[in-house]
Length: 155
Image (cartoon, rainbow, N blue to C red; front, side, top):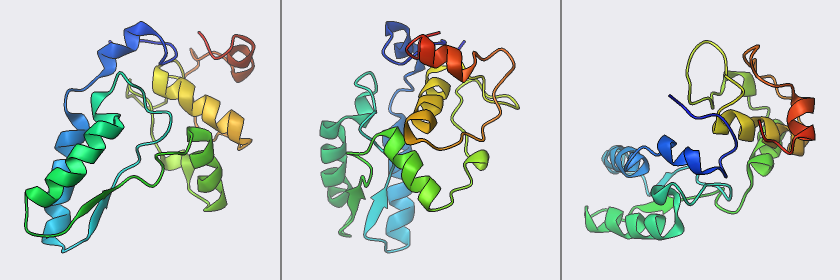
């Protein structure tokens, strides 16, 4: 079961997928090397939480070096959003006409975003702070945006 609530809460540790970024970035690096690319980019951002060890700067620095040690090709890890908030990313996405309705954040899965898990709450908060209309369809069980704002983004 995916916990509901803001990511600052202790129960969010249950959402950690051990070595997720290491696994995905290793696969991406292998593919990038086969294409003779010079970097692998991923969307680590300023809002990534300390509960995710593979989102930390120390991890990224170590992986960046490891990518070059693991192959003869000069390849680097690129984190273009590392100093951006999610709201900054949404703002830039709106400028680029990103089809946000085709993006997915919810950890619960299903046909609609639940609107209650940590990623849904942060998604709603980012759109609100960016001043960009959120096209996401949330479950009927999700609290209203107004209720979430009034309750300081807590359920």
